[in-house]
Image 1 (cartoon, rainbow, N blue to C red):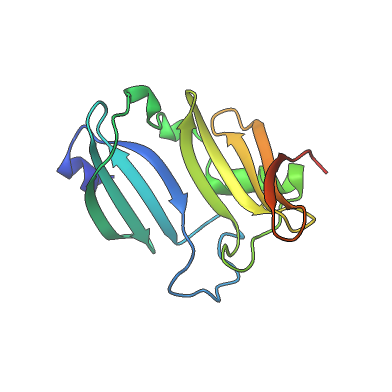
Image 2 (cartoon, rainbow, N blue to C red; image 1 turned 45 degrees about the vertical axis):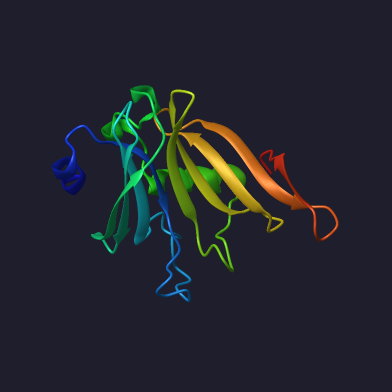
Length: 168
């Protein structure tokens, strides 16, 4: 966070998400404990188009890119980080309540996204359901309540649709 604040002291975290191990695609343990080595973070300044994309690899900044974003109000930014659950806690909830399994193929292990939607800080855990469908479990990052679960279901081997996923 220090690097971005040196660039602009008004920058705030807008979103963050884990990324696959592009340097080691055979890493079958990626995200299985709730931890990832590769992250992309988006920072911006409220009411401006200033945007920074920060890529983290093994706890070090790999890329730091200044870009032009879109206007966002201060309410769009992730706040109160200290009171939010972490990816390990979110994974425990997703596995316990939805029997979520790690991804295979192009999305190895479990993935995590943190965004603010409609004023709520949301952490999303991505994996596979018990039928191996690509699945997203959305959790209120403050209250730990699951607020949504969807999975991508195929109908004819080609056509996919996102559907609400109920607890197994």
